[in-house]
Image 1: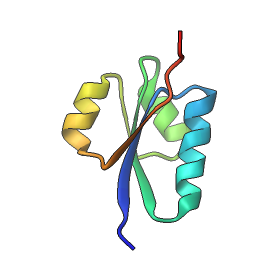
Image 2: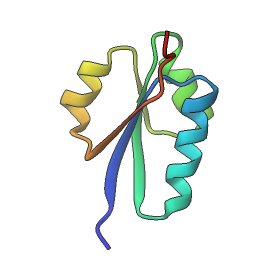
Image 3: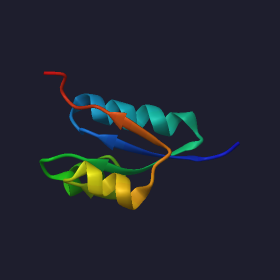
Image 4: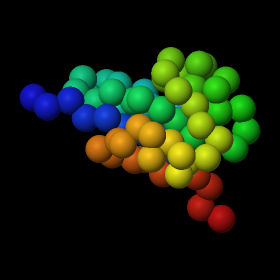
Length: 74
């Protein structure tokens, strides 16, 4: 089966849940996350290789197959 590259935008509670759910699929690699506050720390805390403060930069550099948008809905 093909492996997919995934990124997550927004690393609050739901973002972390999405990272874990993606890992459990077995064929998805979470390659980066984006968050305005401490993106590197949130990436490290969730065992993700890279953290970005700018989601556009993340998309341009990582070229993901899938993006999970986990930002607040307000």
